[in-house]
Amino acid sequence: MKKLIALIAVLVLCLSCVSGLADGNEDLKSAKAYLYQMYKNASRTDIKVTTADYDVLSAVVVSGVRFPVEWTCDTASVKIVAKEGVTTIDVPAASANEVIYTITATLKDEAGNTETVSFQRKIPATATTGVMYVETPEVGTAYKFALNQNGLATPATLYLTGEMSGNYLATTTSILDAVDVFVEEAEGGYYVYFNAGEAKKYVNITTYTKADGTLKNTQKIEDAPSVPYTWDAERGTMVADLGDLGKFYLGTYGTYNTMSTSNVSYISDVTKIGVSQFPAGFAVMVPEQVKTPEVGKAYVFALQQNALATPATLYLTGEMSGNYLATSTAISDAVAVYLEQAEGGYYLYFLKDGVKNYVNITTYAKNDGTLKNTQKIEAAPSVPYTWDAERCTLVADLGELGQFYLGTYGTYNTMSTSNVSYISDISKIGVSQFPAGLYDVQLPNE
Image (cartoon, rainbow, N blue to C red; front, top):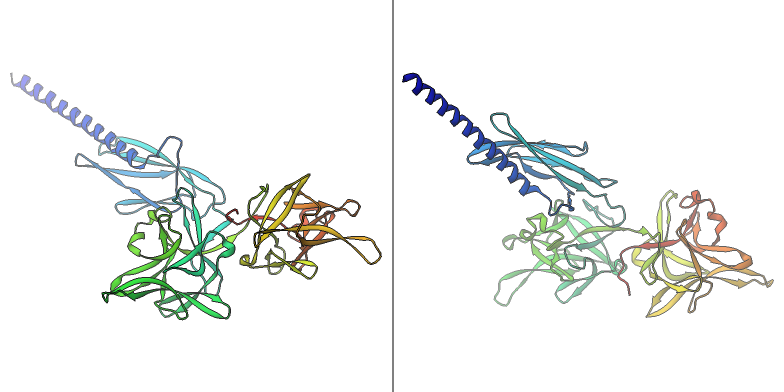
């Protein structure tokens, strides 16, 4: 009888162990399911984009039991950094090409049983053209003060114009109408200013007195600086400390198209930036050369003198410099140009006071009566252009004179006509010969 009781006790103990093991396995699977729900993609075809380091759980607790999580990655450029309480997925700050990588979580119980679950993530290719925001503004360098409204149904980039719109800072969606802004060292930080002729105009976060005598934050363009800014590198914006009122930045939210002050608490959650809150930062425009132009789309007509000791981008201004087409190295001096469909090709024009002005490759008669190629800005189009996709430039056929493009060479800072034979060797383009092309700088179309 004692043996029977002992045997029954052993069986009960074994069943208890098996039951406990089963419960442990179920808890382990539940921990895996929890991780999956937390980090899964929105859909099977969607892959989450990661542009900065992020944290994942290093343990999951189910039914009072703690299951440690070990993370691994299949891509060497993505680092796994274990910390107390969390694990950081360290993604590279920049990537020349898009990278799709997989992170895998391995959960383990005390008995050594494991469960794994994997997640795909994407590192986008780093943009090399367009509106590029700087990580740290430099004193004396010209920038555009801008913000991206990425989260809107119709995304937009707004640039400071240097004007007021009522009590707010006016903006534009055209970089050609934006003012160049600079930072100036101040005690404890920086001032932000732009030049209006010979005078500096400061973009200030400051205060005003309400009717009831209380102070309120506001924004002004003034002849003298006010409260200095400090640079918030994480959020890419300037912050001014107004004491008891709090700390403020310049930007906007929703669909507003002006800049105003907002409390930094609105961007304490960085995931809101570019989605519902739009702080302004310092940007430069890197033009994107057009491979296939569109009729009626706004571009700038420009060339890049890459091989010079001091490389430069020259923009067509819409003016003449003697017999040549005038250019400027400042994008704010550029004119928006358009293509118009023509028989056999295109015409190139810009608008001045609502009137079309055509940029023509044409001819003039020399004193001896012979014809010579030249360039003019005229009220009517001349010889149509064809698009040379290989060289990304417009070519006009002047018959017996030959075929010509607009550009420059050497250190010249104007545009004029050159025979296409000069760029038959494409290795010379950007080195000794600089044909002008159409560049996309995200201009609003007329």
